[in-house]
Amino acid sequence: MLRYYIASPCYLGLKVSRFFSQAPSGFRILLFHNVEVGEAVKFEKLVEYVAHHHGILNPVEAGIRLANGVLGEPPSRSWRAPCLFSFDDGFISNLQIVAPILERYGAKGLFFSCPGLTALSGNAQREAIARNVFKGHINPSSLNPGQRLMTWEELSELRARGHMIGCHGMNHLRLAELDDSQLENEIVTAGDLMDERLSQVTDWYAYAFGDIGSIHDKALQKIASRYQFCRSGIRGLNDTSVRPMTVWTDSLAPGAPLSYQKLVLEGGLDFQYSAARDQLQKMAKYK
Image 1 (cartoon, helix red, strand yellow):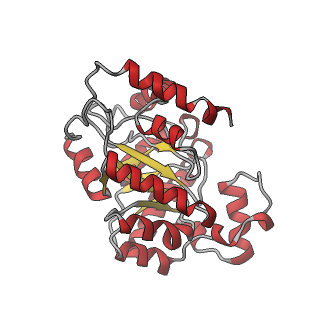
Image 2 (tube, rainbow, N blue to C red):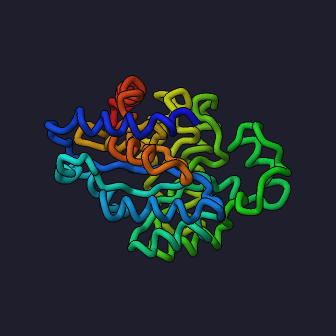
């Protein structure tokens, strides 16, 4: 991909442009979905790099920072902010591949699942994943075994190992397309169900698809009435300007070249999302 080829010169230019600049205080949340068996080695190399050069936050630490508005000390002139690892959709690979890797580095992740899809199995679940998660762009039969979703028991095991489980909507629907009753089910009922099945208080919500076109004021206000934090899919450093309902996230592919991953980790793509961040902040003016 072109973006991977130009990552190295872009990263070099970024380092030069920031040489005399003071790095801001804050942290990043890294977003992944399914991690294939063939991607495990590269994913572990990324975790190792982040652990050694940035530092890894756990979900509890990130929540405390967001709740108190204390985002941490400036990460130094290198702009290497600490990172929280986050995973969407609840694929079984999160338990089988991701969790053991994180745990080898003493890290805990933030995993978002969809209780309505968790309750399905077999062909019904594959059809729902293809329709709701992949928006019909793939055939249910093309999903590999690692793309099934964790069961309630497996989510409970992940939680028992010290990881945090958040809500990704009841059925992974685009909130901007839903009416009031559908929003209630996708946001509030979903969180209440997770509380009941996992014996927890679900504080985190990540809205499906994560872009600015997938959310609106009414949906964000509904999220704010039920959850403590809302994680978007919009890139950015979670600095002193961030609000609990507008938490930024940097999406990364496990198999991407390290040069591209470094560019993302140090904010090289943040400028492209400034308008979306401003728009979401305006939606969250009440929270």
